[in-house]
Image (cartoon, rainbow, N blue to C red; front, top):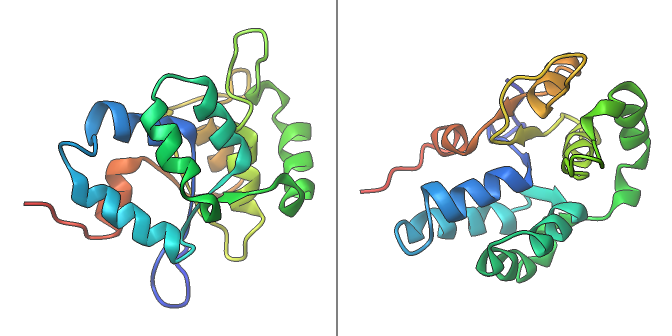
Length: 163
């Protein structure tokens, strides 16, 4: 695991994890302290996402999540800050995006954003598995030696307790 010099982690988060947490697992009306702590990570610069994650959310169900994210503009990073890494990901894992099936175009950007930092960021996604023929984010992260976790592991990383 790669941590910052102060022992903390920095994260690049995927649309799937935001939606999973907000809609299915930890909605703000059930677990508001989680979202307060997510705000703290965002404000400290330890939780970021490519701008395309915000665009994904605008297109999907969950208007309240989109509005919450839109109110945190410091969380979102423009593509020009990780263009070289994105070119690398798209060249080596072109099947990561499938426009015919509507597969998220932000997936390679989340990975490229993580790669653009030194040390690299940890990717947060709810995706699992993948292969060379059917790459998913965890597979690509493994190939690129990028730590890849889900929201529950983020909570554990941060040693957050709710009770």
